[in-house]
Image (cartoon, rainbow, N blue to C red; front, side, top):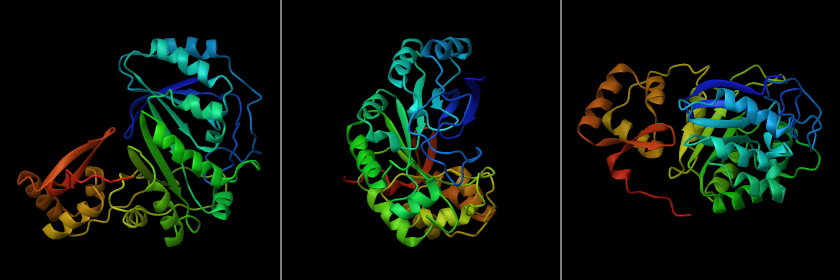
Length: 310
């Protein structure tokens, strides 16, 4: 039974040491179409539970100053772990400057105890794949007790009171939540949230069910549908195919005005001539770099002072 795994070099979060809060079995309140784990009936609580002292003992053996973040995850949903509050308190005693992060599907926020527990973490990543109830049920296949309207309300409340860095993740599945209508609904909710970054992704691993992801180009096109004041980041690149298109100076500035990009994005979208033009615009300070979390984005200089009003 492997509780601690890694460290893993994460582009989004730095050097991460993982804690699997359900190492012996998949225990989840979702049975997502895109999950890399085998299909399993949903649960609303853990029945196979690892003790806190066992986790802390293992963590002490692996923790070092080279670790940027301790990531709470699971073969399933980590927020179902019944001793989560106690565990976070014990981690805080030994973590020093290392950040704590949980990767959660957001559904357990409707539980007041879980809601308050997550407030104690340095970083929180909440998933939100759909707003429409029918699409949510098709993609995430939630436990029967879970209602997306209640989850969205708690995500909104959490974003307003949480003091750490909040990340939102949306995973797009071909033919389900990639429609103009669903993206518009997601956009409307995202505009009400206070968050550090919004990561757009798609299926990168063999899924539990016969569904397909979308291409990097489609992800980029979807990113442009969101309000340009939102801190959107395209996270999935495992199967990304270079677009290598030509961008004039105006095209570059307009593209970065609509959606800040990282150099990884640039390498996938721009041809060599456009990259040369981009470097010149950087040298001329028409384009500047802005760090958000663990990532560095390129934005027009004129946008530095532009802030979204919630």
